[in-house]
Image 1: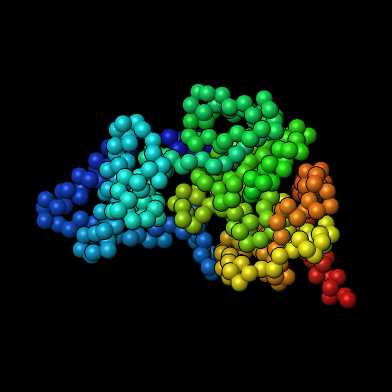
Image 2: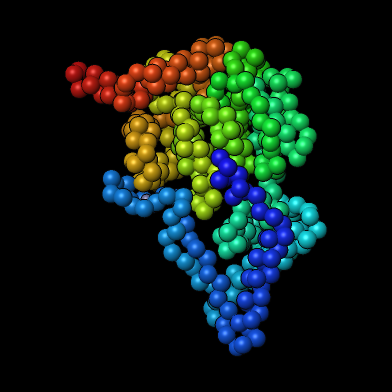
Length: 388
Ligand SMILES: [Zn+2]
């Protein structure tokens, strides 16, 4: 834990010194008649090899460099964006202020033309300056929520979720300033959607179960993933993830566990390798006797997304059981939302589904089975169908 925390903390003076070094080298090249080159390492989180061969993908793996020069028009434009964003960041650091990616975009909207231009420049600057986004005083507008058996400080102010166990608190934006984490929880439950988080709050899930519940409200932002990672590193609690049984749910699950391709260079700080997939699985449909009406057909877009995800090397290498469930989703060509589990009773999710899933994982952990319960279930289904 110490290693990662120290990676997170960089003195603003050191950052300004690094920025000066970069601009000085560009000016030096220009003064001596050389064409300046900025080289950016390229990282990737996964490839599409999908085999047992070692492909070398890991959060630390740098697959090459892009060299930006003024010699080519498109690269010169990219350098212009980089330097413009760098100038804004330098001002933020000098004035000890923070800004969001959106704030930066609105400083020169006609120059940047799209938010993605700013996002890419910030990512590249993090690689060039070997730092994280928050070291540049660029913050996300936090959208994550947390509740349950947890207490911590952010920049000296207390957040006491235990005062009201079923009330939502915003995930802190300045995760690097979070300290004094105290908890009486037995596990952390990550849910994909706010509606499910709200269902759990209404059913007083945290009062009845000693746990912490977090949601990133869809694709999780950086503070939510870093906060989850920090909780895991500090508390060492089992961490479970509950997502919709559809390609987006699965992609969100992999974002929590492996990080995203867009921010591959920071995946090692943002991923949560111990996160377990609690549900909903394609195989839950029979197991919990869901009515046919709760199933939705996969769209063409869904099928394309699933096929692309099946090719990601880390699934085969690290979580083949997850990959089997994803294949099953594609075979059956149906999906369903977590809310579909509430058809029998509104409290089914809180009182039966989640507790039974957690028991299942714990039983599996305490037994010597090498397969997950989901794989075992899947194989028994396949065996049954070949016997008939
Ligand atoms: Zn790979």
